[in-house]
Image (cartoon, rainbow, N blue to C red; front, side, top):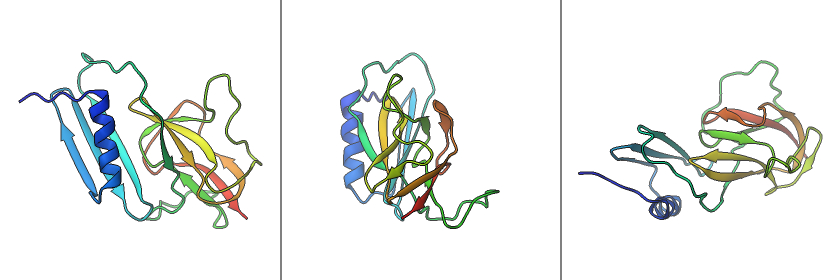
Length: 165
């Protein structure tokens, strides 16, 4: 049996999964694999997808989906040299590409020293051509930005550190 999943069906599937109590979901087709895992401690979905064939290209961008940045991972990350216990780490809730600004010619969401508030966008992670704004879960000051613009990031990777106020 061959499975085809168009953009609208994928968007509806992700929205349905986001509203459900399903913790893990895996869907495989002839030329794709979609895996969704929910980190219940921070109520985030991590989505990783791997295209096995370049015969099908995704062209039109899908609507933007907002995801809150994780500041409290369920399992403590390995000790990072130079990390300070008074700082909150903003980690990647999914595999994707890190962008500091909403567009190539636009200013970054935050800079080192920026004062931010709860719900403020701090960066974008692009995954499967979806642009996901990460929002801060704490108010504070940006102390470190650890990832360069346009860099691929892994699930759980520390993107920036904040000093909460």
